[in-house]
View (cartoon, rainbow, N blue to C red):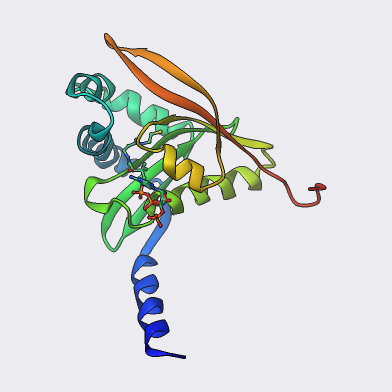
Length: 177
Ligand SMILES: CC(C)(COP(=O)(O)OP(=O)(O)OC[C@H]1O[C@@H](n2cnc3c(N)ncnc32)[C@H](O)[C@@H]1OP(=O)(O)O)[C@@H](O)C(=O)NCCC(=O)NCCS
């Protein structure tokens, strides 16, 4: 094995310090804060200040946010002690939420969370994954095999936000390809 190959393996090992764990009730506050930070600082790249404030307002109902998470399969990406991101999947295979913290961008957390959503959907025999995907997240979903079916103009608190309906068919074990 050459020195160059060893160096690349070491870099991959560092990327792999990310892990997934299930959601716990005490995560609700930190995940709501992460959601707001991610929308306002990361998605701000593709949406106006007014749009990100409509998407993640100052006043959010933590009880409603907790109830929304509590109804879904939620995975939390961690790097050491820090929460790097989270994702939520409903019972129909729709990915309701996927957010990575501004300090943990482009380190593989989004990919890991999306793979976790896919594994959870396959485990319950769901035929496909769907999501309403932001402009910011579209490259990640495309990299993970989702296709954009339609652009949507979504009215939200007085703003109009563009996103995309995206889907990925899943083959369950035993099904012909
Ligand atoms: C979209 C988001 C979840 C991506 O998370 P992430 O952890 O940075 O993504 P990853 O590091 O796992 O990226 C995996 C792959 O997706 C693609 N990708 C991710 N971000 C990209 C970008 N800004 N531009 C181009 N490709 C990108 C790349 O193929 C990347 O692989 P690479 O880094 O080896 O090139 C994150 O940017 C985010 O939280 N955005 C703001 C909130 C948001 O829009 N959420 C989605 C709601 S639907």
